[in-house]
Amino acid sequence: MLVLTKPLAFFDIESTGLNVMTDRIVEIAIVKLYPDGKRENFNFRINPEMHIPEEAEAVHHISDEDVATCPTFKEIAHRLVDILKGCDIAGYNSGHFDIPMLAEEFSRVDVDFDLHKMNHIDVQGIFHKMEQRTLSAAYKFYCQKELEGAHGALADTQATCDVLMAQLDRYDSLNGDVKWLAEFSAPKKNVDFAGRIVYDEKGREVFNFGQHKGQLVEKVLSENPAYYAWMMDKEFPADTKRVLTQIKLRMR
Image (tube, rainbow, N blue to C red; front, side, top):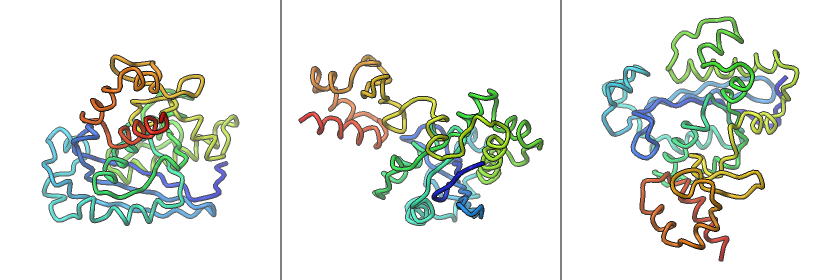
């Protein structure tokens, strides 16, 4: 049984591509589950102000024409904040893409909304630890139904919500507490959403990419101060740069 002390917002994003820095959201759906069991659905089509590549359109079936008259992300950003404020969040593989993309979009339009303060349940993380499958297979396995409308944001979001409820019913070992589920479903301890910086087994920040992978961030910045300037100048997500800056300032 899922134990909620605050609303849990399931969400899914469709986009122009998979590059958090250069691609944009074209659709976001949210299923807000309240502690009393009530569900509230939200679905927004968004004009990304760029061409939607054919390969992306082939996945989510959203074309340039479909979003030509839709609001931009900047125009709905504060509405999204109002919906998500005071919630924990959940998604399917959202830690790898949806959350970094949403955080980048908020940063891009100068809306200060800290997703780090929310517990995050990754339903895929639970599924992979328990069964090792995809969302459509998860929906069929746990809910005994075919997922119709897959890769539509609202269909995927509703399915993710249903799968989590079925997982809690199926596995007695799962704790319904949101914080416990967030920790259990996390693939690793990311410091930034993109996972460029992670915690090691001692709870220290280490780089998770490139020539300094596995090395302590503080040690690298101390021995090679120019590396900070290099990262700030390159196309890293705004959230990664913010975390790196916090570590650098802490070293003073």
